[in-house]
Length: 277
Image 1: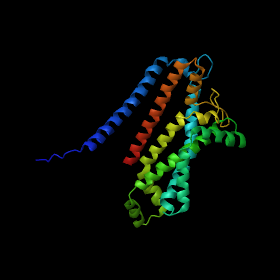
Image 2: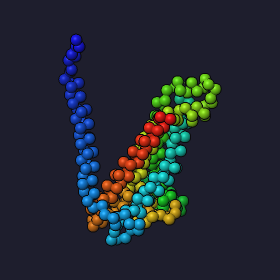
Image 3: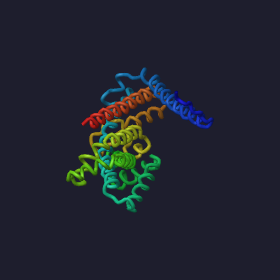
Image 4: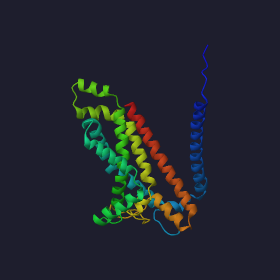
């Protein structure tokens, strides 16, 4: 016969507070997604996916291509830097190293800076000083600086979560530190690293303020790294700002939502395959 433990009133209050907060958060998310879908799907028209943008069709196809290019370029720049920095901090640097503390404090500080500040920095440094102008290259480098702390911190926590017995077993078999990191530790930490990359992808896709000052707002497919272009978030902002294409802005929001969900789903599938391997 099981003994029933008496729950204290304060513990019961906290339990219901946690459950209530979860319900409110989940409900707000469902309401937001449902509102966007209901307002946007009826206005998805074939002309919104025309190859070229005109003031009549306000096509989002150039913005879709630009968004994909911006995501790929930003991740190509930030992901290796973030992962390799985290590997150094966890696997090579000493625990009481002052450089490690400085890097971590700097990363946490960068993570809290508003995106408009990144945009102003990108405009002054990449657009003006480097002479790249409003371009895909300026926008991708600015976004890389934005997402670098996120990828670095998530990778660092993922590496720390790998048991030390994995490393000790590899060392006992004669493997060096470099081989142990890349053949044993990184595959075990891959799901956590991919989670950070997924979060970074979502931030890239939804970023507006930083890209207005660096990538520009030209509604065309960039013909090179030094060409200007607008992402889906900027396209949606421009349409809603004009006030004449609010319905098309909601349709753009639906496509952006589908794009982010699709990327997250694909990343989850890749993470499961990595775990099985």
